[in-house]
Image (cartoon, rainbow, N blue to C red; front, side, top):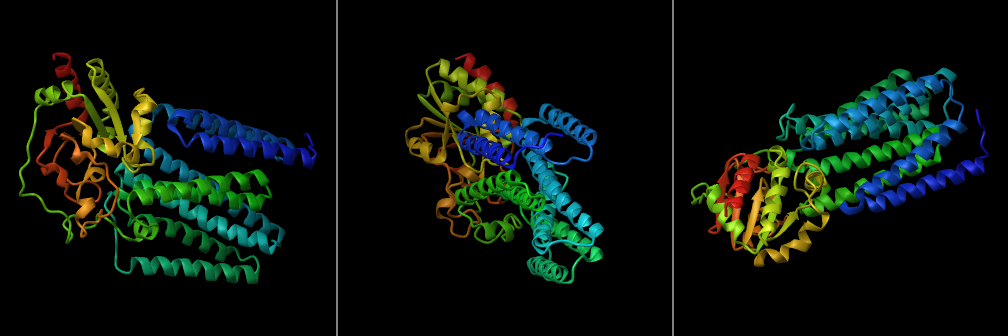
Length: 464
């Protein structure tokens, strides 16, 4: 085994950290995201190689088996998992990261138990790692279940739910303090592990599908913080830095998501939006007139327009319509139509969901516009084509103070000259709020599967 000078190891870790920071910077833009991912991967490879060369490893063969197994599983998942299931996969990856950090903390405690000694700072760090890692693991599994449909997406609540959660957290802190004071107590430690795992379930289960983008970004932050705690346990500087960067990035992203929904993080975690789809103050417009349109009429509006803004939503993802949408945009552009995409920060089920799907369909990054950049242009757009989006275009967010989405920044699709909404039905979105836009005087509904209807639009545009 090569024994590297500690100063050299520190210097190489510094280079690795620089790659992480450069990678995070590039991940901030869709145009440079692939390069950012590559840079961060290079940094992690450097850190792993140096760590394996410089640390006493008991069994390189076992590590090789783990690397091979992980590589096969990761590559298989990357190739086989559909882009529409990407939020579920991200949720699982968050959980695996938190679970791995929790296992490191548990292993460290068991090692101290076998040696009959454990320094006080290490014990405290282990307890922090178990708490954050355990919550991340089971919370991410619940989020995966909600996104996959294994668990109902609606919030699941029970009486005194939040007081129970608070009591469990206080119990964890109290028992943890007792453990620190009394020394190694294996049964008590296992009780603390169980409390952390239960807390993860109880924290995420009352959060509805509308808030999944926030939950995913928050759990991503937790996985980073758990990794940082594991770094302190192992005395590994680069793991501390990497975990801190992931945690900070996840918290910043969580703040962006909550701001885009005009919500606070406590409201997301404890508000249970979507419990009652007929809550007082929610928009009720079921008695208003709905105007429908067929693909031939919609194609005429789109084909002879000068400016079209496409608003993608989860319905596009669910129908796997991104390639058909890109084809439609290409056909319209061949006719001289200016086509752009308006992407809301919380459209879909994870941050950047729409960007990922449209990138898969080879939509140029220059055609994707953030909400603040595209909103002023809706007034001049001939057609706003909304494909499976709901809450992010609901005008009730501007004026209905009794609505759960009141104050949420939305895309100004209702200000376009013509509005075409593609949706399977008039069912409300994740928030459970009826969408006023469906009954707008300039709105026409094109009902059906998004992929099928967009393909019909493509065929009709070709005939113009």
